Length: 110
Length: 112
Image 1 (cartoon, one colour):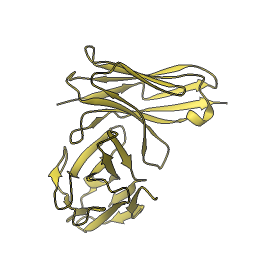
Image 2 (cartoon, rainbow over the protein chains, first blue to last red; image 1 turned 135 degrees about the horizontal axis):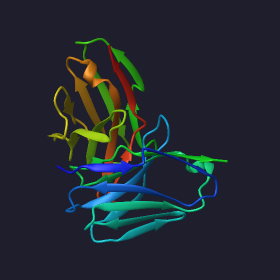
Image 3 (tube, rainbow over the protein chains, first blue to last red; image 1 turned 60 degrees about the vertical axis):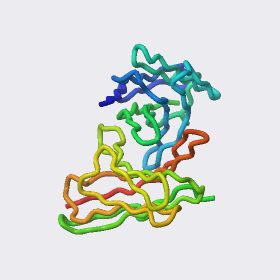
Image 4 (cartoon, rainbow over the protein chains, first blue to last red; image 1 turned 180 degrees about the vertical axis):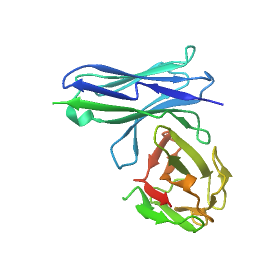
């Protein structure tokens, strides 16, 4: 059974700092890996999708990497802003077996 | 284009009562999902559907039933609610061409 872990559970940084969020998974035979953002009281919004054959994806200030052999993914956020404050979740799997981590709650202080 | 909507947003039930949560999507997606999210845990898949008239069990299906009578709607039913079903429930629809799930805003359910 695939297990997905995100450490730390919470992170607070000053505005402008570059930061890295971590995601680890136990089974390297993944279909894809996604990073989502969840704002309080809201649903999830997909940020980045990395296919199994890919190593990284970039969107604006966000860069996600995937290392299947070590069972790890990182989400790099450059020049953080208060508007980046949210919970970030990673998920691995396909259309019928996606497994989510518990998320990292990020606070970016002005 | 409303995306994925969920009804109701909040609900309080007593143990043993029944209720149905409604999910609707206007994106013509074939795949739809019901998840639950509990504190300190990731989302867990309850049931899903790959098309009108089809349903399948996910990771935590016990105590729930679903129906997909129309392509745009996916219903989640609790026949006899238990306190362990207190959770936030999310519906999602899926677009294979982009491999992306689109989530609704969630329903917060409390079972007393």
